[in-house]
Image (cartoon, rainbow, N blue to C red; front, side, top):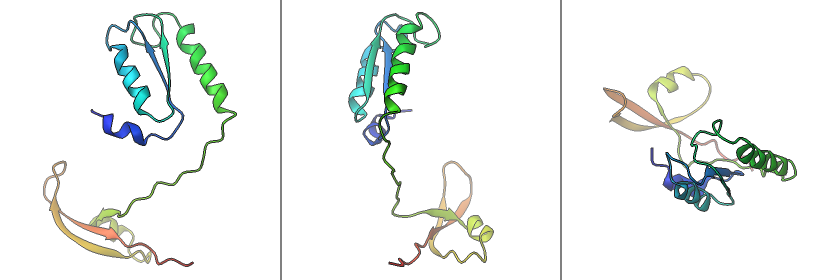
Length: 130
């Protein structure tokens, strides 16, 4: 799975540890991750093992311990994920009948992942009370 486009949207403390001589993945991959995740910290550990639990452990565990210790002193800001629209199937509408949630029809569509046709509805936002 190609996650390169999603990396800049990561907004949590991130530690990337990559062994310099990794025989499975080149260290440039770890460098790319760290340079594309805002505020990420990169540790290039010695060794050529790919799996963290094989080979020298201190070079992997010590940076993890330091990273986690530093996190205890850094407040994590509250964040809210917002979306412009939430789509549901007609099944969801049937399941929440009587709840007062309103929906707007978005038509019938096919999905690659599920055969057949599906009716989609947009969940209507509640009117602002302020």
